[in-house]
Image (cartoon, rainbow, N blue to C red; front, top):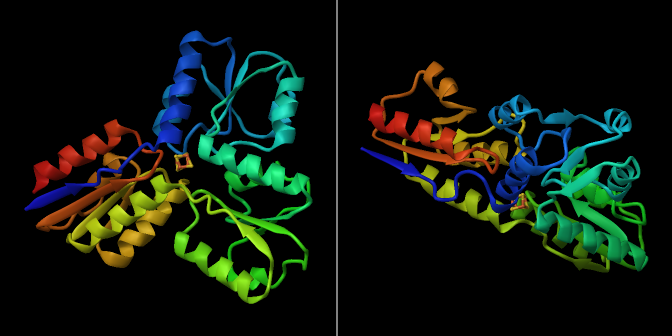
Length: 281
Ligand code: SF4
């Protein structure tokens, strides 16, 4: 009988830093306090902050109504125009963009300033990618499939970056395809190690257990990816937001269980699930 808890489960460096910045603003900042979008993909944390008076600003229309207080940019980051808009409206801006994402902004900004076409491997609807696009001076291209490589323009200079949570193997395939097609590109692998490490560990654990639990918010793309990876290796893989979800499932009678969690899952939720599973075996 064994329960294996992934060492990499839970908050990554960037998310931990962003959440801490919000709690710090609650204690010491200039109210009212806002976050531009939910600070993380975790309903429990967002609800707790809401109770403490932190309001989530959904979009630019809501942003336009604000004229005072503090607004926190979450770890995904935002485009330059949005950030400038916040400042122009007289808000105190606390930038909690993950430094790894900020590095992509700078790469894209500098490359596009030098006249490069920017190609981003990622999901065009993801806030992080929308934010990255917003730092390019030239029209950026977002690709996620080999077919989309065919649609890229023939330009002299290209800089390729990736969404931090993009799948490494897929990124390599896209880059290889671009090379095959004869594109002259400068490739910067901006996939975050925290994501890679979490995915590798999840796969290794899932291979060796009879059931696997993946904890994270339903809107968290990195948790969804973890689930897919685990499901590939272990048929009995469960995706839960909290212990309540797990309790409502008919948890199987197994001899070994692995547990991992997405980057926005707080430790207390992981601990609750861990304790519960241990008590069941
Ligand atoms: S996954 Fe990586 S890039 Fe994204 S917030 Fe966490 S540390 Fe930053």
